[in-house]
Length: 257
Image (cartoon, rainbow, N blue to C red; front, side, top):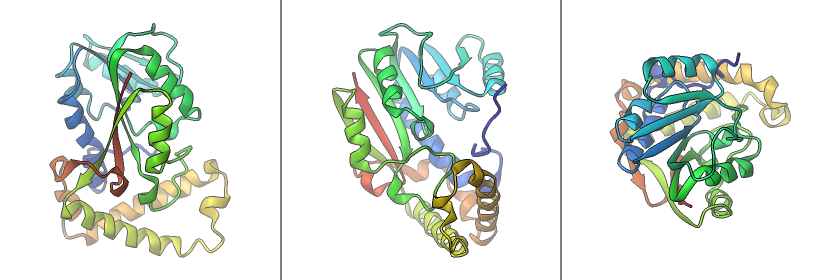
C-alpha cells in the first residue's frame, strides 16, 4: 500500500492556504476548457476533482496513493479512479481521452519523456493536455520531492517534442500573492543562511525530505503568524492566467495532439 508523501498541501491547514489556493486556481481554468472524457494524472486527494467532474461527461483519476484513490472512488461511484505507476498508462488504449489534466505532477516523474509520450498516446487526435508545474526560476530552495524543475524554454522544448502546438501561459497573481511570496522568500533565505555547507544540493534527496518537511511546516506557520492575516486572506481568484509564464511561480501549458 502506498501512502501520501508529506509534500501534500492541505486545504484544511490555514498556513497552507496560499499554496493551496495557487494550486487550486488551475482547476478553475481547466473547468472552462474541458469536455467529454477527461483523465487526471496525479489527482492526489482530489483538490479539484469535483470541479472537473461537473464539467465533463466522464472522469478518470489516477494516482499512486491507494487510500486516497479508494476514498475518491467511493465518493464518486459514477466515475473511475485507480492506482497507477506513472508514467505508464497501459490499461488505456490509444486515442481514448478528449483532455488530460496533470497539475504539479511532471516534476515528480523520473521519465518525463515517457510521461508525455503516454499522454500523447491516450489522447484523441486534437485532444489537449493541461499541465502545470513550478517555474524553476522562482523556487526558493531545493525541493527533495522533485526529480527536476524546468525553466520556461526547457519545458516548452520538452512538450513540443510530443505535441504539435503549445499555448504557454503562467499562473499570475495580484499584490497579495506577490507580497506573500516576498515574505516567504525572505524567511527561507534566513533559514538557508545556516546551510553553510550547501547540504540542500549536496545530500541525496531521500535524506533531505524529513528536515525539509519540518522546516517547511515551521516556515509556513511562522509566516501565518507574522503576515497579519495575509496568508489566510489569499483566495484562488487572487490569481490570473498570465501571458508571461517566465514571470510566474507556476506554468500553465496547454498542448494539442
